[in-house]
Length: 95
Image (tube, rainbow, N blue to C red; front, side, top):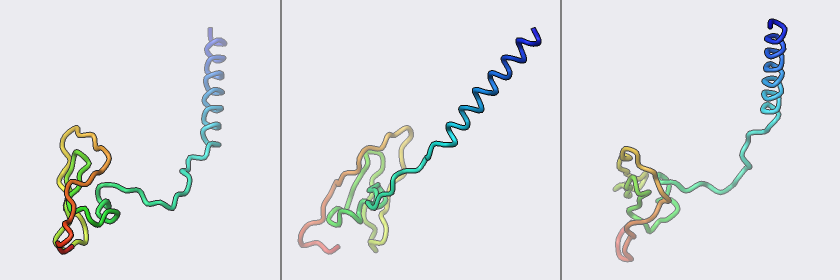
């Protein structure tokens, strides 16, 4: 019984060692990209004509100074979707 227990422990330790070694050898890096990801907080920088946008959970609009967007808080258990423009600047309006 003691020999069987010892064999099981050695087998378990061997499996754990092999698993950890295999995980350590994998490179966990993302490929470099030069494209900046669009998200709710920087969407206004990509679409200059959009003055109000949403991800179906939060709504943002350009601030008066235009430096950064003003966004609402996210609701409970809301799953954000792709960002879309709700209102565009009219041709005659100031930015």
